[in-house]
Figure 1: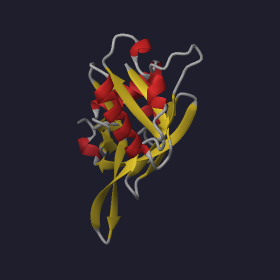
Figure 2: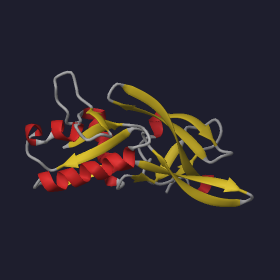
Figure 3: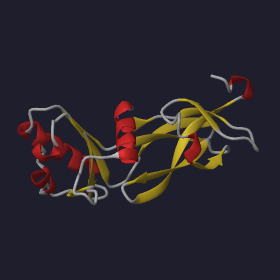
Length: 178
């Protein structure tokens, strides 16, 4: 099962490390904690460089292989100084459901790091993400910036909706059926 943890902005890596240390002493089941990032490519003086940026500032995602949610030490984790709280649904559940679950498993599949995808786009046509971690998100594109090789996608986690910009590699029309 997956959980989303709200933590103090700017303290995400410290929170991740503190939670991991605490859980490694407390749990027998497998767990992973991510501070998900995206890789952006920037061009300066004709040279591309890659930089890592937070995917969701102030949020960590956790995977836990436990049997039932009630066995997870939520209250102890929430006592860690950098942690604010776990995302919780109206029914009291903290295990991610529906679209939130799909985002968390997508982050897991990509080991917490979203690299540039290959995209086919021609002005006046529908954008098509042909390969990479963003494949399948075509319908959530809200902005295309060919000049800077970026697209913005709309994400909703819990009750928060945000647009996130990703670096992409635009490909030529002949390669659109990859």
